[in-house]
Image 1 (spheres, rainbow, N blue to C red):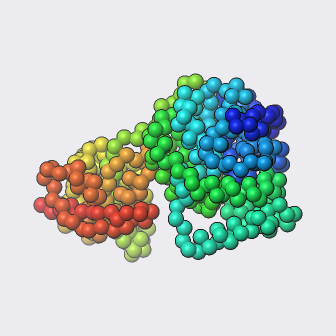
Image 2: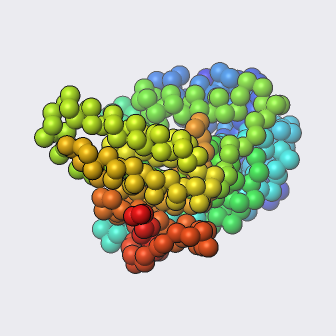
Length: 455
């Protein structure tokens, strides 16, 4: 990837190096952690990396933030305000008026802040492997490991031996081969001084831009690897749930930095190319983020049933389960989102219709069981909110909590979140208080109610 390296100065006098590659609509890349414009292209199989793929379609603009790479290194201020000055200097010097911005890792909060302050310039916002608030609380073991890693930076960061830097490499790319590990170890050494690394890590603890997320109105794509060790997956999901209309794309990878050759690298590149589009002047409207009631069903003891009946008879019973569920959803205004083999996920624009459908489901399976040799027991869970909608699928905390509530129910039960019960006030449904529980991935207890469905 050929790059044209230039320099500019920020409003506070810091010299910033930036490079442009490719032609077309501009994308500005805001990096996190280590960066060195000259050393990045030395990555093994760099021509397959996301940067190179984007440069084939767009004018891809990267820069070394203050303290890193070819930019001025004798700096001490690594606050969000200082990082915004870096972006503003690059944008002005490159003559950009309208562009997409890609914030990765620790660069995400900077991209979010810039987009909130300059919405007239940012046509598309892409956030990958990043966070908006202070990193989530860690277990004592994780905290102890992090402290041990921090203690290695000052005495060993700039030394020729890579052992100190490899502790960090393992967090960013646990699935990398030795060639890639050696490259990233050296990238970190060449990118910045130990003092810079310590200062950047110290500044991360004060970052909190979550209050800016609901203000963002440009089309936004949030991407996060499920197994990311550097920035937990939940933090990406939190960002997507707080930006109106944001699209959320989980990546099947354990790497914080996608590796050339792994499927997630190609998925990420394709998603960005399609998201920004061949003609960014005709900007897509944000994906839907309307109020929905989300319903989950689960066929109890499905695995044991299949083992007892065998494949043919088990599949026949499963088809009957699918028929009953689909007919009931259709009759009650439900939209099937997807099936998970032994269960369904559906959405409703009406809370009342969703509860009526869950009651109709339990009554339909009860009627089936009266005359069937093989009985089926189904549990149902409901939650209401504004899930993230992407390509016909739903994501976000509303969906996750609905799934957790369904898992809490017993066979033949309907459990709903307190939100659903409140919205159904005066509708004639009977609710029984089932207390609260702390759902996995949520900090606060969730109060649930059982819906009575017997005639």
